[in-house]
Length: 481
Image 1: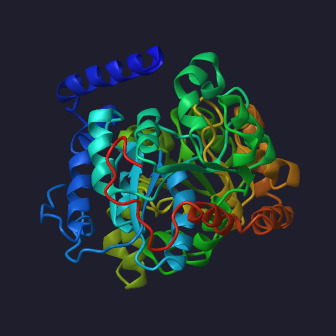
Image 2: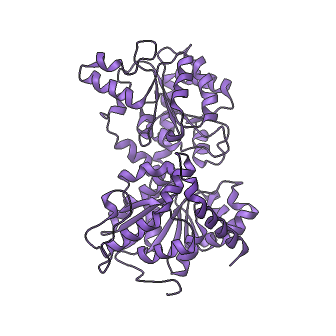
Image 3: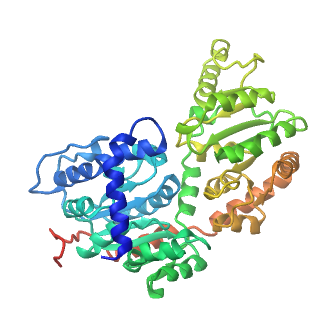
């Protein structure tokens, strides 16, 4: 075993041993450790329920899909995504695979606590955190689940899982593959630790030619890389087509008065630029309303955010409160409901704070202009596909270079980058005061999505090469072929 692998596993074992002391509280770390604690047991219990000769042990947590009552002898695909954005890409591909392969069983794992909310309606038979990436954990899980293929997304390839899969003859593939220039994975230490896992990939479905070429820096053979585009394109278009326009969150601004800015997946670094700009813009744009959706609602201090907005003259309310008002107004009971959200003015809210996940893509369809967060810090810009598909011109911060779609939308004239609060104030004022030009920008964004659809199907084609219908690898243990 390479020294880097030994150090990696030693570090993980130490963290696992210390994890009980770190699980308290609601921090992202604590939630992730709690979720990961029994993830391997949940997957093994689910797998035993699938086996014709398996036990009825259905321990684990979550909904009833984790405990099938009828054994099924069909192919199993294990799909892993880091967070919410990657899960959207994975979902589009899974939908195609399920339509093609009767009896397909899907295992879905994720890493970030922000993806917990996707499990409720995700098209998988079992959905849980990725177990600890250690041989003593991943080995038994693979022996129980027996996947035909393991599907990673973007660049989230876990070295021990890849190694244990290779030892059992299970193919690993990467979909929606993207590797920005300067990514940590292609640094010296990154190549040393992750190079073997990437070299073991049987296929890579890359988002772009440039991304595909960069995977060569991690040792992926060029004949294993195919440019299929981004399945998130298909997901974004389908999501817009399936929106329930009568849902409560779609009626929060039902009167049609004034423009609406929807700011999605924001971080404090975005809000420090966005709020001062909005305070200035509202003076020149009568009737402006805003929807603000922090990237991590569970870690957001909504009371402080509401205080800052109120200090600038806004009337803020949480989404659930605004939904209650909209529902009551629809029933002719607005007078009593309005009291729940009054913040000093006695009027309805004009600044909605989104305190839950799963509705942002819908809310983008309300936008006259969209702002996508992440461009004012180093962790990366969030997805610009949802607002583009929804028909909203997009504003982003200066750090967007890792997003091929942000670059594409900028080139198409459907997006604009701003460097600071002053630039954002100018851009918002210009765009909100020119609805005709905004319609043209919005159409360019929709065309960008439309002209790149089909990736989910092409990606599914690649995966089915390694997971033929009704094929299973059998009861393989490590070392057997």
